[in-house]
Every structure is written in C-alpha cells, then in structure tokens.
Length: 164
Image 1 (cartoon, rainbow, N blue to C red):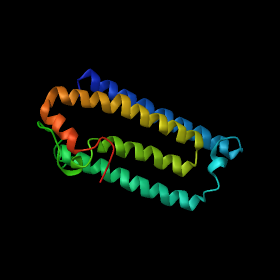
Image 2: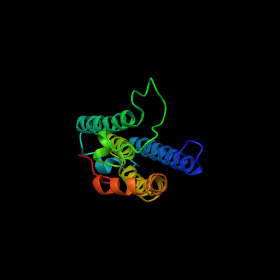
Image 3: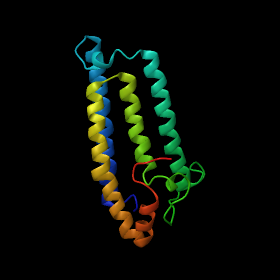
C-alpha cells in the first residue's frame, strides 16, 4: 500500500473525521459542563487528580505503542522515512497486528477519561467500531492481497486487538 493508494487515502480521511468529531464532542461537552448542561457531571464524581493520573497512564501506553510500531516499520523514523519492502512481524507487531490503531484509540480514551465526558465515551465506542470494521478490515484485505499466505499465517500468530 502506498500513499497514492485510494484505499489508504480513504482510511486517512476516516481517521481525520474521527479525530475532528471526537475533539468537537469533547470540547462542546466540556463547555456545556461548565454550565451544568453537559454529560461531565455524570462522571464528575471521579476526582480531577485521578482523571489526570489515568489520562497519563493511557497516554503513556498509547504513545509507547505508536512509537514502537513506527520504529518497527520505519527504523529510526527521524533518519529514514522509507517504508519497508517486506511484511513487518517483529517488535510490537509480534503481539498485535494493529498497534498504531490501538494506540490511537487509547489516545481517544485518555481524553474521554480526562474530560469525564459520557457522550465522548459513546463517540469512542463508535470509533472503535469504525476502526475495527472499516479501517482494520480494509487494511487487512489489502495486506492479504499483497502478501498472500505470508500474511494469512501471520494473522494466526498475532491478534487483531490484543497487546502483550
């Protein structure tokens, strides 16, 4: 899959729409929460300091997954931005086929925890479904077309969602 691949461009657009919609919902819900109108009061019983600690935990794990997957795919990303010419199955990809997507979803979840937005949680659940049934499935279909049996064998050893 190259950057010029229309399927890849569609996936990037879907991810951008997910990001913008989540940010908008969290911002609007947080602003409404100031006036007692948002869903934040529902989860507002969780102290701010506990939400901040949980946010830090989820962000650390998310960024670790994202950085490790970038390193496995591109090596030292800041020195070389070339894409691999083979199926990458080592590093974090030994444990999961989708560390970038899992890291991204954990980032969304971290912001939901930080804002304590119940409606934001609903949006993230929707995003998980979009990632699972649209992004991951289309990417796996393309990888099967490119790598064939090698990718099908890899699917038997590494899970779609599980890490560790």
